[in-house]
Image (cartoon, rainbow, N blue to C red):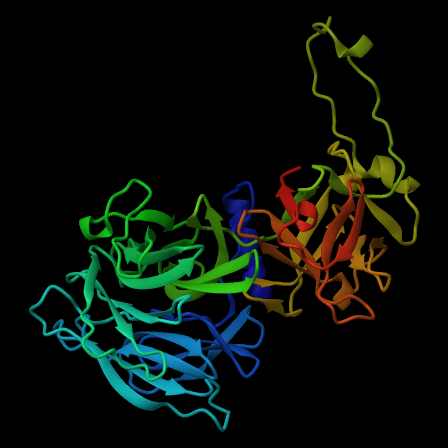
Amino acid sequence: MRSRFLAAALLTAAAPSLFAQAPALDGAPYIHDPSTIATSDGRYFTFGTGGGGLISEDGWTWNGGAQRPGGGAAPDVLKIGDRYLVAYGSTGGGLGGGHNGTIHTMWTKSLDPKSPDFQFVEDTMVASSDGFEDCDAIDPSLLLGPDNRLWLSYGTYFGFIRVVELDPKTGKRKPGNRPVNVAIDMEATSLQYRDGWYYLLGTHGTCCDGANSTYNIRVGRSKSPTGPFVDHMGTDLVRGGGRLVVAASGRFVGPGHFGRLVIAEGVEKFSCHYEADLDRSGRSVLDIRPLLWRDGWPLAGDNVWEGTYEIQSERSGGALELGVDFVRMERTGGFFGRGAPQTPPTPVKAQALAQVEGGWPAGPVDVRIGDFMARPHQKWTIAPVPNAGGYPGSPYFKIVVEGTSRALAATAEQEVVALPEFTGAPEQLWRIDQLTDGTYRIMPKQVPGTSEPLVLTAAAASTPTLSRFDPASPRSRWNLRKP
């Protein structure tokens, strides 16, 4: 993990930006065409082209080991009741030299190869293409809608994207159900439902060319799972429409194969692969990123990475700060600072840590919320902690006053305090999730004396505390700003 952190630091030095770009997942997350991530037996799983896949204990560090029969390409997985339905393309996509594809489904009670319930059964073909029609039966995606109806989308650039209904009890195609053409100029689709809308996300551009791949993910929506799906400009996806969700950025080229993860109300993420991670020899890797929603449309967020921030309360607009005495800067500029200077203007130096730290208490210091003045006691450095584990998409972080070892920590009284030293204790490790509105939820890995998940909360305009997350309230929402 240390080498990944070092690579990110070197990248930041080479290409400064507002915030450093977080690296893709830790471990060996090498995969192409990943399925939607699923949890089974306390672990995370995803499957890719070729029959294998990845496993993670925490959603941050991923390694090989997942298994599924059938080979083929671009599988998807969906839990229905106490079983997992897996769909995969056994042929098509040029795998056998043509586009005569077949899509199969099969069931298992566990995704963990070590489980006695790990056994794939009832393999059934549910869709096909003959190699001449305007469709290539590959790249399946599964959706169980709010009415408990099961839908399969599939297809590639070789013709239409199609949607067909399956039986959620058997995984088989419903008798007499005919596929509907819903899009063109995309592949690796993902059908999703949210707030009365069905969303069809698809991968545009070219794949399988490493750093030259032009993959990007676009979306249309409809009130029906069979369309018509239109984008934000009203263009139907069967006419090539699609609103951009995520494209290449920084060291990541060619995002594709969208998968949605609903962590909690207000906390959503998505998985994808990059055709090329330029920090990993240009190989295809898995990533997990925040999923934002704006005006009813999905948009990619960004995982937090190392940097110094103002931690601003969404409730009050105030900044998290050490509860120390305010130290005035030398007054310049004459009476009220009005009027032009009589001599050439000169920069006023910002207040330095060395000018104020000597007056701070040596032991634990309370934390409060105050008006932001860009002072040393209001600037927090957020940094990943090597070998401390993580959660889907990110490692745990430490939060310290910039230039010091004074670490934000949770207390047994369910309050927050700044301790003199960072020790790596669970109450000093922080999970930072970008929420669906773009703000952040900040929560300790563990609060002493309780297993209840609590988050940093503005109990009052100037009073931070720990409490349960309320997705409907701004109290537990924070903004990270460049100070």
